[in-house]
Length: 313
Image (cartoon, rainbow, N blue to C red; front, side):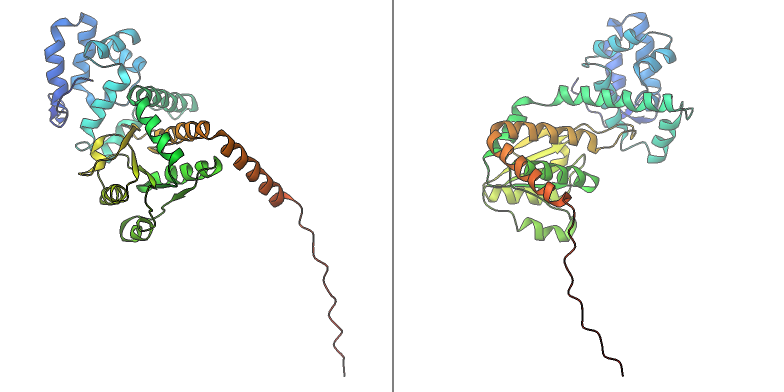
């Protein structure tokens, strides 16, 4: 992705991302006539672009899907998903939630086919963007820390607590001792003091920095452990720096949940860890299924001793 300041406004839109206007102006002379049509639309309607597929952009600009994708690449992006993610980031703090809902619902006719197309298109784009941004070396480092450390401690901000609990559950099933903190704010102190030397902490913090994340990162460092941050960008870390960062791109439209890309990370980590300790994972799986069979066995009513009859007068 072109390195630019994405905090200023897009000319012609009144909203975030003057970097896009500058980029289009810089590259305009190298674009074909059809690509120029797409680029001009990007600058005029950035709020709409974030919610549009390549086919919808092609229809709106009178071009083709291939031209839309070529335009994104001609502007220096890996593809349309990366371009849309960049525009979306620049709009997050300047377009109100109400406006985003309005744009998300525009063009929807309520039919199941259109809804499914919208959701699955965004899912594919998010998966492609996440795979592009994920560093295999970082994933390897995180898996090594979890597999070799004494325990893994997970924590998620807001709804990301779902991902934290999911990871801890899956790791336990793979034979790794894991715990999940389920509080925030002042109450989190009770969970933080449970951290022990050498622990690995996996933190899910989608976007902005939270004080809880900074305190955990500092505590893990003091204890000589390893910290793993799963986030859309490094702004989620605040002033403290984690040992490992795993990319989990947010939905720029709000159409799909923020935990989606976090759960992809969880599944990748669990698979990598299980491969490092396959015997322990297999043994734990056997134990888990044995306990499940016990829980599913029919309940045998205990014989009840008959109480003596109460004499009547």
